[in-house]
Image (cartoon, rainbow, N blue to C red; front, side, top):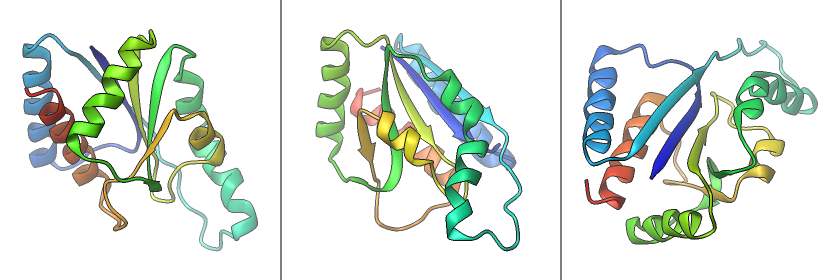
Length: 152
């Protein structure tokens, strides 16, 4: 099975980069393709009004949106998404394969989240919790969950 993680922002801390690399190695060692694509985050304007927030998110995620292919099964990580178990997660991945999707693509937004257009494109909106987590921890948690769901 092939996986992509599209995310806004880079992981700066060496500890998290090593952990992420280790988990990716485990996945690849079991024959799963894994590709992490980082897109630059944009500086959030000091006084960003709610009415301009969506335009900011669209601009920040424009390149990310362009990389999503029609044959990708898209899972958007967002706080308003569905909370599921690891077993249910595995079933969603199996369903993607059964329906002929080539890749399962996870999408992680920047500090302000994802634009509505990306959430609408998603085949599943997934929430790990109603709490907010730093992006480096969320990326590592997603990879651990992926490895657990695949029994790697």
